[in-house]
Length: 268
Image (cartoon, rainbow, N blue to C red; front, side, top):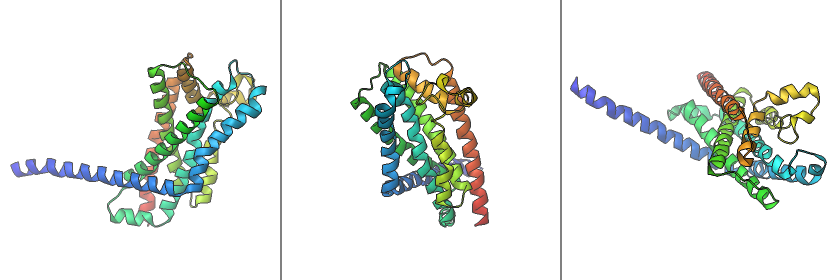
């Protein structure tokens, strides 16, 4: 009995260490795959910057927001980055699910949790780099923030939470479809969400029939929270709504991803 009691913790620790090691291996693998796909990587990193410059210099003069348009639009573009990065995540998950990778993972005792963590963390890293590039260009063209350390930490934390949520949702899409083309097409909905929101124009200027959707979709409270934190404006209950939306998306996506992984693995 004493030997069993002594041996159990060692085996549990070893199992936990093995799971952590498998997770690190999958994260490193997904990062390498992402950096090797140069075309998709450049698109996810550069396209948000191009869109920001397009809105600021071509459309910004005609859009009145009560403040300099370059200041108003930057938080929306930061959120837009997550959508473009998620498209690559969905494609990578689909390729893994349909390329015989599941059988190889099962032979190495790698489960859905490690696979999901690898893709989501790799997506978070890509999106963090893209967001940093957007901020760098934004500061170069005149964006300024009077937020303190707490404001910046809050904005970055909420933005990363949203990135993780969208990446996890993209993983679900990647497991549902059966081709990279379909995965890329289905993530269009994620790319579209920032447009009918407060990202580029105030919601009050939209037609009445679309205002309800713009106010009550998950992207709007995230943008309003990031904008309020970076510009030291009152954000009301937007941060709590944003956190609730992101938390709900993450939980639902993790449950759906693990369920789908088990079903696909059992059929292979």
